[in-house]
Amino acid sequence: CVLAHIAVALAAGAVAVGVAWARRRVDELGRPRPFPWVSVALLLVLAVSAATPEVLRARQERRLGGAVSALVGARVAVRCQRLGGAFVDAGPELGYVRWRADGTPEPWTLIKRDQCRHLAAYARSDKRRPTRDQVVAVHVLTHEAMHLSGRLDEAVAEGAAVPRDARTARLLGAPADAAARLAAAYWRNVYPLMPDGYRSAECRPGGALD
Image 1 (cartoon, helix red, strand yellow):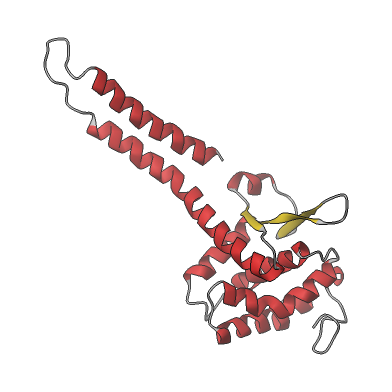
Image 2 (cartoon, rainbow, N blue to C red):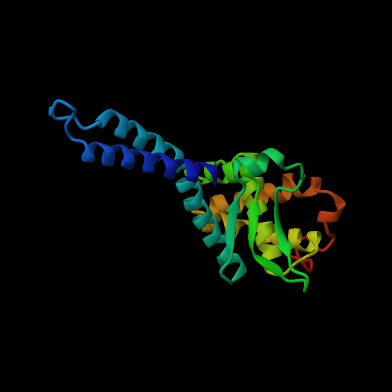
């Protein structure tokens, strides 16, 4: 990632400034040269600033990956889309899983940048009053987990995800009652509006996908 490279370069610059001072601690007249605290501190502050988004992203990816792994029953990973990827992305999907030639999924899913932002906001909240965007983002995570479990068809993955949204919310730290309300909100307010390819008559109480 560009920011990670920038952070490393800035940290290396701070080290280089310190080494240069250590090699020439006196000037041409033999007077002690003061340590360049301001330059080193500025470079380190910029390095930390550049590294912070990557550290936060990695932490979020680990947390989301743990939740999805629990849903799938196997160790899988979640990757949050970076700014550069979002800038050139024209796809309408909110997340995706890549499939191998033999019809099995790769052990990771990419969640789009906006959905990762909504998931981060949900994680910071008390999870009792999620926004519509947060409800959808939690469901996207569940939906992609269903693909990772081997469900290729979109309607089947969607139908399997709907009754599991509450568990996803619980895995992300929501109380049981709040998790149940989130799942119900998706079922009532979002699922009926999904395209035909994402809906199934069997996704109903007592149906094959219940």
